[in-house]
Amino acid sequence: MQAYGPGFARVYNLKWSNFARQTAPLILNFYENTTVGKASKSVLDLCCGAGHLAVHLLEKGYNVVGIDLSEHMLHYAEENASRFIESGQCRFILADATDFTLNEKYDLVVSTYDSLNHLENELALKDCFRCVHAVCDGYFIFDLNTLKGLRRWNGIHLDDSGEDSLILSRGIYDEQGETAWLRITGFVHNHDGLYERFDETVYNTVFNMERVKDALLDIGWQSVHFTRINDLSTQLENPEEESRVFVIASK
Image (cartoon, rainbow, N blue to C red):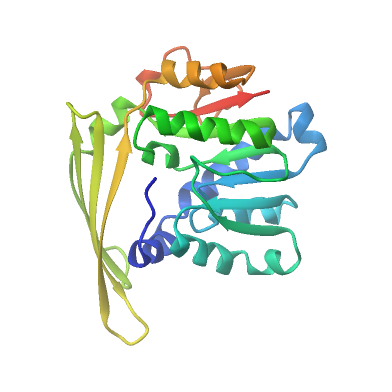
């Protein structure tokens, strides 16, 4: 799985927190209306990044453990959630989403912002599902970019909206390899008044939604359905028609 460098992690922390802030309340609204969710506030945030989603959950009284493969992302996660770490409500662990074990069990495991698309193939995705199944007693909620969504990555985008950074993104979808990649080049304003350059390539693997569902069921999840984030309780009949889907698996 991909681990991000310091420049990208810094920009991610500064500029890309909106997805977590928008999705966290909707995930909690769904979870808190389930039987398990009414009784438990233990959450594992898988591929937690800079901890934006975790902080929202912590502010709502949840106990959170975050896992990420990037030490640079975890630096910001620990910084953003420092007061909750001090109180013992939260901790972060450097680990691979495809190969981790924990002594605790969690009634909610979340992984957002198409983090699992970064896994290199279906075998790695199944390994991740197995690890989550071993530590989850309730719901596993995550989102994926679909083939339709990743085909839209083709193009160039310039973000010069902030005084502290300039970001150029070039996206390409490889039809034969069923992979999309986004080359991000940026300049970030440092405390010394200079700009630091960073380069990062973000990869997304295309996963067939029906095979994702079959993999979850084969591993032992009892129920799996696809939804849109604005209505997690309603099942999608044709998830491949969406650009992004949320997957809800339960025991």
